[in-house]
Image: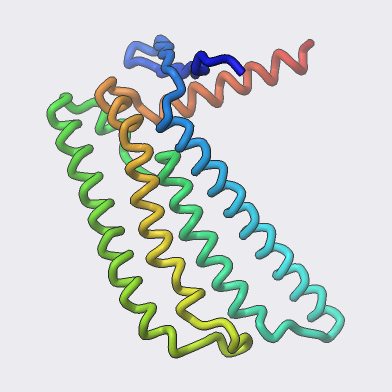
Length: 209
């Protein structure tokens, strides 16, 4: 394996419509981002597949007159876990809804202020959610699922403090890259559109060939 670090290329559209190609070395932070992203993808896909299997099994059993007594509870908990950890993956990819077009058109001083303020609000909010979610676990430890009494509610609801802490970690891991894009005035929406067009053109070339 070569001692030289790999390089990743990214094309960012400018306000004039021309592409700006940036070449950045793959740093330790980039590697950590990839590992965390891969782990979250595997975990969330696993949750989605398990939810699909549970739903299909419940439908099949009801068709033949049977039932899963724990279906309602487990399926709702699975969906909640998928939502929480999926939100962490979206935070790592900076895929949550926003207004990048308005931010990139603002002066750099205003962009920086809005960026820092929004990050503080998001991190502060999830810190509060995580703290109080952890405090509630002591109360829920005395209760359990109705259909599966061996599983305590503190286990099922542990997703709240864990995902809140993970969301903050993902937000911090993606912060340097998001800051650079903000300073360069890169519009993430235009970037995604340009990437989609590039992939469509590549597919079209493959079909023609």
